[in-house]
Every structure is written in structure tokens, then in C-alpha cells.
Amino acid sequence: MSEKKQIKEYVYIDSLEVNSILAQFEDGIPSVIEEIRQSTETNTEGTTGKVSSDVTGGVDAGLKGEAKIGSEFGTTNNESNSEMYQEAISTVYHDYAINIMTNKLDGAKLLKTTTKQPEGAYVQLTSNFELIDPVSIGSNLDSDTVSFMLNLDSNNSPDVEDAQKGFEAMIKLSTILNKFFPDSLLITTNNALTIAEKSNFRMNEAQLKSLVLAKRKIKIIGKIESIVTNDILDEDQLTKNVEENPTLLMSLMPKFSFSILHVFGLIKKEDRLIKPIAIYFE
Image (tube, rainbow, N blue to C red; front, side, top):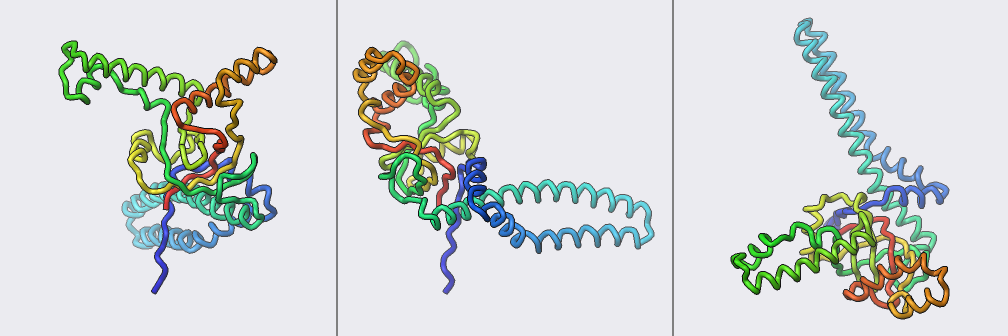
């Protein structure tokens, strides 16, 4: 009985980081290209043969009108196929590249499966998760939306007014987080926080919201950039350090941004801050 096939759903790929890692292995990128060549060679020959046969048939028939139409259709169809083919190749490249990159890192004993690693370590984590989009936390919230959600009328009901104040606080929090973590999504997992660039996701904003309800475990391949320490979480200590050494002022706001996350229970001491390379489900 054949083994059940596991299909990976890649939702995030940092192609620049993938290529950078592969380029540092002697046969990294060539291995990806060879895999793609082998998997697409047959399809390419089949498509080329079909287009050639269709055009030749039109000419041999001796019907100029049909030959012209057939030629134009063949050209248009070929261009469309070419665009689709190139898009497919790009997708296939990235998916193959991640598999080969993972194998290369693992073979070199550089890929770890736990968060208890030092800064700079590459990790492959599997965990329950929560997805936080700083922009959408408070977006689309107004008095009408709040009233509708609570199924109350908006005639100055105290409950609605209290709810509006709560949602206004959420909007302010959203604004603050978006300033600290622009164009990013935050993913909390066991003992780690992943900060992912929005443009690298393969899902649009509406589709990403569906992940908030997901119960399956997320898989993240990434690099530990830093570790959360007490001096980051203690606001009083942050201020004291700056008073004693004004040159630390430049690092105050970045540290304060993570202090805010700690206040809301999104990070804790010894958590790892991860730059993702690929995020997927299977």
C-alpha cells in the first residue's frame, strides 16, 4: 500500500533569504534548477509539439483563412501558455528551493527543531499559533459596527458607549503596533515570536484572517535574530539605563516596542524573536 502523500501549503516564502542560503552551499541553486528541469522537461516537449502540430496542420490544409486564424490563435495561445509556464516555474522553483535548502541546512547540522538555541541559529518549528495583524486589530471599527456587533441600537446606550471606548482603545493599540511593526504580521508560537513581512505572504488580507480560526499547527523555518531579556521587559530599567547612559536613547524605542508586547502577554523572558524564511502547513 502506497504511503499517504503529505501536501504542503506554503503561505509565506522569503525568496531572497532562500536564495542567499542556497548560494552559500556549493551545489545549492544548481540542485534546485536540476530538480525543476527534470520535472518540467516532459511537459515542455509535449506543449511544444502540440503547438507545432496545430500550426502545420492549418498550413497543409491549404485554407488561407483557417491558416491565418490558426496561426493567430496559436501565437496568442502560446504567449498565454508561456506566461502561465513562467509563473508555474517560479512557484515550483521556490517550493523546490525550500526543500533543498532545508535538506542542506539539516545535512550541515545547522537546522534545529527547538527554540532553545542561540542567536543566529536556524530553526524549524512546529507549534500552535496565534496570528496578530497590527493593522486589522482596530480597522473597520466604528460606532455603527460596534452597535451591529452588539445587536444594540445606537441611541446613546451606555453599553454601546462603553463598547465604543473599548474599541477606540483597540484602534489606538493598532496604531501603536503598526508604527512599531510596519508592514508586518506577528505570529506567536511556543517560546517564540515570529515577525513576518506582509509582502512575502501568498495570501491576501481577507484570506489571512481565516488563519485566526485555524486549529492546525503551523510550521516555521527561520532564523533566531535575538532573545527577549529582562532589560527589555522592565520599563523602569529601560528608563534608568537611558538616564545613566544617554547614548542608549537610540535603542529605547525598539526595546519599548517589545515591552508593549510583553504587557499584552505576547512575549515573555527567554522567548526567541524569529525572522521567518518559510511558513507552511501540512
